[in-house]
View (cartoon, one colour):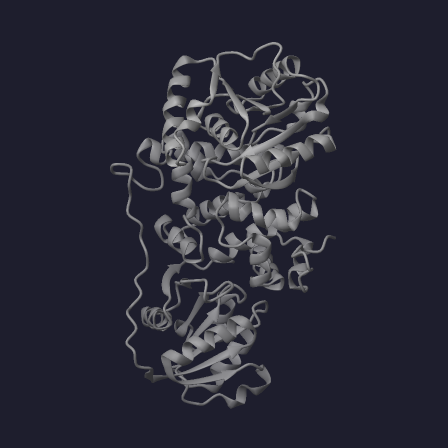
Length: 527
């Protein structure tokens, strides 16, 4: 039986040790502080009970220092995230263990290569980044430093298998896969809140409405605003990429002690550790098709098809026009126009043409991700009858739609829009008119970051998708999500965002690959 030595008896180190015992290793934890050992024993007993084998915790041995010599074949350091401390531990392990022992660091933000530099035989050093809670999260990022040898990498995968983890291979770059690709989820949400796009409660509801388990603000409160900010600052410091720049709002909240659940308040106020989630109301289905309105749906592609299918079940009088060359076929009595377009083109000119053909009472709902609403409104006879909406990818997968509350749009138009989307089973959140709204800029930026990571050989496309599904609980891997949304659509959204807020948010040149047929392995083609 191979010996596994875990240095650090905190929550993470203890969880790794428990997984090791369950996986068949002879496990020892090194923890110098008696109080920490006592806390860890309680944690291990509870987790072992939850796993259905209370004896697991009893099989773990404890010590207060690294024995010299030590016959462990594998050592994992899980001490606090300080370079000096981790380097000291790894150097001690290198002296105590045999030259063939695998040395692993659980760092989440430090360069594995820098840590390997302090070790004799650095080719045996690898990153094994577990996710909290380690006994429940399936993902393990295997981080290959420049010095890491093939044998160490192969052994790291063997360790992952014995611990019951799904490994993904990441290069030794800031944030590895998950912490890097997830940055836009937090940063774009914070920027949207700073700009007054909507409230934290509303933005969280929009995020949950497309499949995220938690909205960005409730998730930051859970993680701790200080911890989340520290990760952002580390990645920004190491990359110097402006898209990763911390947001002043978060820094100010941390300075004020508003850290989230652990301080009792963050973006939400917690009473007994709990807060109430807000969800937009959806009116119950009346059962009968609406015969009072006459609708026209313009555009082609999967979004337009899905929208038409839903609307045709809710309304009795619906005309579908997929080709702009046939706009003359629009019935003159149309009261509601839903323009889906092609998902990637500004539709202001087409909407103006339709407006000139219809009566002054017609109301227009336009894809706000692709179309500049302000410019479009200036073309219309009655701009108060124009509202933008946001359906990003699959209509089936999106239960909440963002609708733009501009200065020009009337309350009646917004109310009609809410009724329209409620009739097809969708809630509505009103947002301010900014490029990409909230979901477009946020998910588009996540997809963009994933494509940048693949292009920079941080990881393969398949590993990026696996990492984000298992390590961040995303409903889809970002590259698969990008294929569903469409590369051209994401490019349009991010181009508008970059034009308004800076080139650091510009679409990556590889986004067009998302519109190519998938390769047999499901990998995005490499540039």
